[in-house]
Image (cartoon, rainbow, N blue to C red; front, side, top):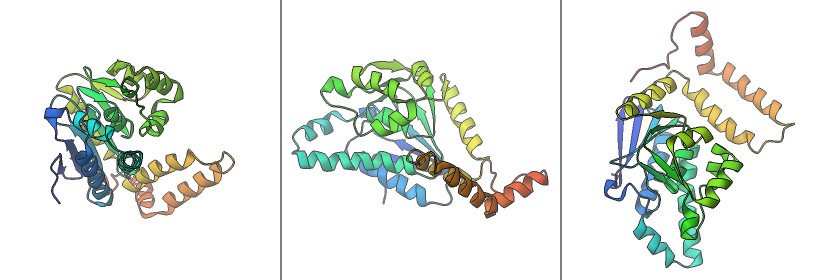
Length: 262
């Protein structure tokens, strides 16, 4: 099925997912939430895709929730709001669980749920003029749906400060707290994103997917159980086809078969 509110373009092993509501600063509404969920479900199952770039068309990455959408949910019953919040949570969960590395390309505004999208990316590259906020409390609500992902990314101390104040912050602050990993200026944003994509293409896709899954499992693994879990993971990778190829390629001083260029 085609998309109406986002664009997916594939360039070899790289899939770029672009939010396409520039007139609304790519604000999230029910339709865009549904399409993002479906798109990342499809990408997760697409073996031809190695890396995903998540971007926003126009001046902003994603300005949070659409005003009309917020007005609509204000009239929902508790049960309707609960179902709507579950769909939003599923969108973030689907992106977070994507086995492919995800790079967020951030310009302009990344507010509320837009900052949540940055949090569920593996790497975030931001324009130096980008602005961020978890501003929900200023509307009398809370960033509850994105909280687990944001707390994991920036830690409880920074999340508590930013969630409760709702203050805006710049790209440098976002980098300091770990929400953003690299800052670029102007045309350098594309170059910086391409650099991160190129790094991901050097790694083994099975190893990358396994590492993402392992990090999530370690969050809920008892400390005494962690050594056994990690030992099983490395043993499975070493004896797997990809691990065997990587080790042989290293010994033979050649590139492994999975390594590709854009």
